Amino acid sequence: MFKAPANRFASFGVVAVLPDDLIDQIWVIIDHNLQGVFPLNQNLLTFELRADQKDHLQYVYRSEATQNVIAFDTDYAYQDSFPETLLVYDDGRAQTILLPQEAN
Image (cartoon, rainbow, N blue to C red; front, side, top):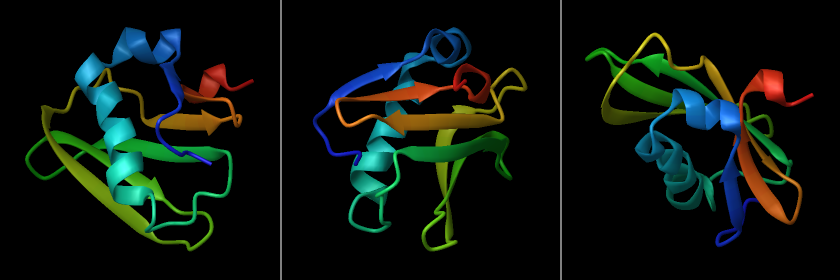
C-alpha cells in the first residue's frame, strides 16, 4: 500500500481547508519518511495536525503496527482553521487525503 507513483487526490473538504503545499507535504512525508521505515500494510493512515513550539504546523503520524509516533515539523504557520486530523486512504488504485467526516 501507499506506493508512489499512484493516482493521488485530496477530497473537496481537504482542498477547502489546506493550501496545496500542505497537501503535497503529506505525500512527501509518506514517500520519503514513512516508506521503508514503518510497515504501511493497512489501507488507512492517520495524521494529526497541531502547532509545534514555534507555532508552526506539525504533522504527527502514529503507526498502528509498531505503536511508534513520529512528528514532522513544517515552516508553515499553524492556523486554528486547520483540521485536527487527516486520513489518507489507499484502495489499491488511488490514494486520497480526506477529513474524518468524509470517510463514511
